[in-house]
Length: 330
Image (cartoon, rainbow, N blue to C red):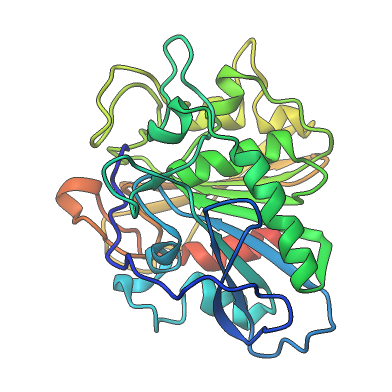
């Protein structure tokens, strides 16, 4: 999973003080006191007065803010209607795309401190975790800045990420429950819960989308990885959602009582099958979309490094639509 999200776009617009100079679409804004900017995407019907729901979209390890939307798009085409920004436009959300910590080797290869790095547990994507970067503080500052720029519906703030970004979304759920109403992880896991523990102050809705043929963050957990080969373990899907004897997963944290599996229609002959697992009786919804045969990829998203390296892209459902549908589940 190391530096696997080497997304094509590394440029971007110069950062501005976004307050007072807003326009629909993308603008690159400053986080005061930080050298890391973020892209703020506003939907076309934004009127400057209505409080909008907000999604924080976290790139994968080795990626950057300019590539986070692209990873969700069919064939990496940012004109596709299933991109994160496009679906947010359709649903009336705004999206913030923040930047992780840059690598020593390249500014556009960035990572999140998603927890881990103790005992046999991996410092996922390495750089930010090994440096103990305060990414929780960075996201706190970003949220404060967004609230100063635009009206935010504070009851509908969400985080979503892929890989290292998915693991960072779990950390936000653990440490900023009550601020984040829900999170979605694609090809990630609750690394912080396995190492530092997870004691959320409030229920958080949690969605995991994960391929069983993921070679970078294995569905069953363990040390296998695309590039970050250090023999250390990643949290499995079961550990993240069900937990262990010592560490509760999110179905236990949200006090769920049972689960039920439903097959998603096999609409495309792509070699994958998807099962949706929903837990019942929860204080907040918990869902798993298990993509049998799927790789370390966003469903109907971009095959950014090729199937031979990261595995297949499932085509039976849109990962982006699934995320927004889950956030809006009663």
